[in-house]
Length: 368
Image (cartoon, rainbow, N blue to C red; front, top):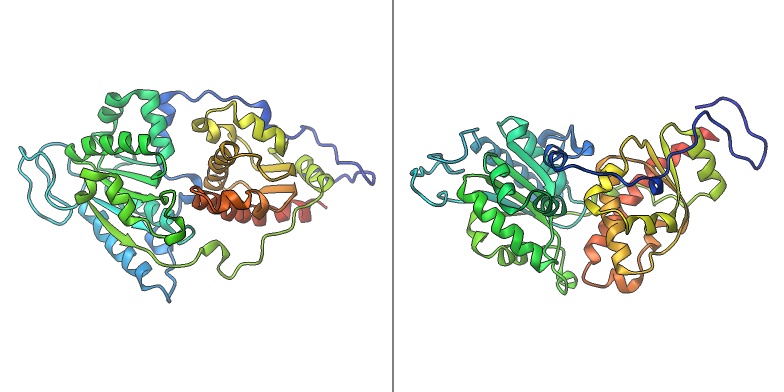
């Protein structure tokens, strides 16, 4: 960071101008999509031991206990051929499906630590990283689109474990596609673990989706044990309210003073996201250390809002601070959106962007 001071009302000048997400149109080859199916950087270091259960929510402690046993049951035996079930029952080489559950489903509201636990399961499973896969439902469907269905089956069939975060119950077509894929993988001996969102029309009935998940995956339901995880959004547990937005001048100054920061006009970025496939949103942030946005305003329509949700997930995965001017992040989505079928996604995006906004406060305070 430059130690020179700028004249009042101007931004400091550094050797390099801020980066711009709007200037990027990344190409992501299929092999990168496969190689990147690991827990995102935010969850590199998480383990069961670093998950702190809420003492008022015994289901959280129970979930850790069950998942530790689940991981221990995945002893690294080769996929295909004879193998033990997760609960020790034998399976003949000729059997079409494993005996007993081959998967776990983590059922709970946003912010109770489902992704932390899912990533901890990935880390705890006794197999080399190349034989474990972790990704969101969207990333899995993107992989099928890039490789084709049969090639995806062949690529993942040698894995011991496939973790799927945020299974998209609100997309019937993709649900059928992925359910068919998972059926093929179960037959190959791959263990499964998943979290999901909630079906449209069910969001007012509570934050839990196990019944919906098991119904939508149809023939696969017998292979999953549902673990309910109660609790409040940990990102708001005992934390201060989301910081108020900064001014355009403060955001611009911080972008110039922060190494590898990007600086974009929010409406222009929303337009740019429409021209980049969501599978590339992670690559869009390659080399970026902080995201600075000016002119944040409510998103104009649902298609734009859903793209922003994907970007928010990728920013959160990569722990990128987000410094913004304009409206607060809890005003990004209209009341109609927050009461509609994708409500859970929008609240997740608000929660995650709020956490990243807290992380970004020091960019202004340190650069002032």
